[in-house]
Image (cartoon, rainbow, N blue to C red; front, side):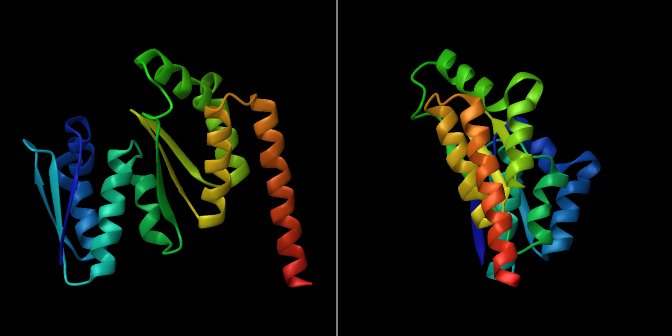
Amino acid sequence: MIQETRITGDRIGVLIGKSGITKKALEERTKTSITIDSEEGSVDVSGEDAQSVLRTVDVVTAINRGFSPERAFDLLDDEDLLLDVIDLSHAAETPRQLDRLRGRIIGKDGSAREQIERLTQTQVSVFGKTIALIGLPEQIKTARAAIEMIIKGVPHETVFSFLEKKKRQSKEDMISYYY
């Protein structure tokens, strides 16, 4: 099976890694073969196992959306983890509005992004016109809801209260599940 994806020029080096170490590690861990066309920005992933090929494409996409290879490789450690990408281009009409949105999602010194990550147990990458999330389905759903609230202009305090409530609810659900 062969799957093609794209990668931006400035992320090709990150995917390849120093002396090809990242690409090689990804190929070894997924038993796939990765061919990168630096000119076109295309990445072909091939392998015998469709699941491995698709997982490798997820890792390449995660790296392309700003995650470090280490964080993107988390997708290989747990088959339940998902990658979700939120496109901000619909929410901002000008580059200035896009910068403002990214700034609101990141927060002062990264505090809002860190808070979202901590309260939802996801990983968040703000890169270009996208927000990428790595996490379990329910965690991603909650993180996405929080990010969409921020995009709509909801105050951070309200968003974090929502996340705290969801976290408590999740703990209570977990406790009631076991008792």
